[in-house]
Image (spheres, rainbow, N blue to C red):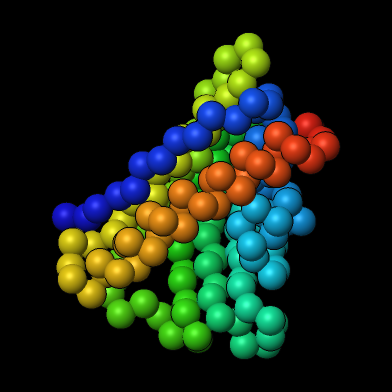
Amino acid sequence: MSRKINKEIRINENGSKVFKALVTPNLIKEWWGASQAIVVPDENGVFALSWGENPDKADYIAAATISEFKPHVKLTLSDYIYLADNEYLPFKSKFKVKFRIHCETKYCVLKLEHSGFPNKSEADQFYSDCESGWEENLESLKNLVEKENVPVYN
């Protein structure tokens, strides 16, 4: 049994710009606060981020496979590897992060589902941190896309 986080945010821009912010390393670094980002934007591609000042010893590393890639519509990250201070999490997990973009005429709704959190007490703090982190990061993504001149995704 596992827990998941579901969030959604309305972004007053088109789906192409929202998608571009999800898969472009420099934009990801801005809205997610990562110090490094590597993305191979394709199905079975790579999505890897790190946080911290020292690139040789990152504070956090998250790496995943892009299991679904449909420009302007959806992006799914799976087969996660997650490290904090070069240590694996103290629990087993099968994280999957799904981004879904649903657009209307003048805005889009970005839906996030982050699943695979075990129902174990040792995962409670990480789950809570992710829940509040996604809240902040999605707001940051919204602000970036709405305020910056983000190009469309080709």
